[in-house]
Length: 275
Image (cartoon, rainbow, N blue to C red; front, side):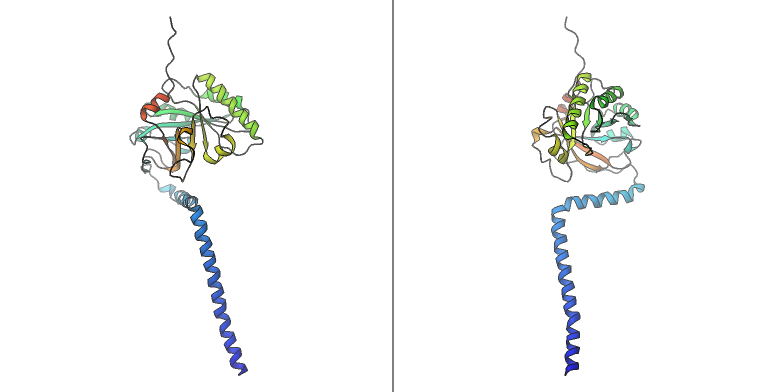
């Protein structure tokens, strides 16, 4: 009898162990589903970016991301990261405007700016230039680098200040640097610059401080920006789009208004002196 009882107990132990492991597995599965439900967009985004990295070598430059529905005016922003761009091909695919990186910090000039600036205009793509702001460098020096580099003229889009670098020592110092750049660049070109930032950075550090400047907002994995429409004019809705003429990913943007509205945003021709 004792031998049978011991045998029965030893038989029940593996069953209890399997049941416990199954319970633990179910808990992890449930937690995983809850986590995925909350962070589905981010997880899908990381998965797409990992896949894009693995398949980059097979890209041809003819891939095309569908245009965002509900908007009539589409554009891109580019830097040397996009390599050599076939601008006539880009223009044939409903890209109406492009912002081109010109400068960063106090010394860096984008190596492909001059070519992109020239070729975009030849292809009749409305062009603008942007400066990537480094918050720990002097705003005046950064403005000087930009105006020495960018020959904005009538018909071009206003200059853009890209503010998103999170490595700064003091938010008030950063804001003063931004204000200095915006003031000096507006004075030089005679047109109010556009401020660019991503949603979280803007909400945390910039909202309420530069509301007099047009806002270009980066906000991904959402159906529409979470800021009211009267707060922004351009929405960067993707940083992993594809446009024929560019081999690899590129940022995709929409202008909130009509094409006539975008034309009206351009730098006007100089006024003739009154007699």
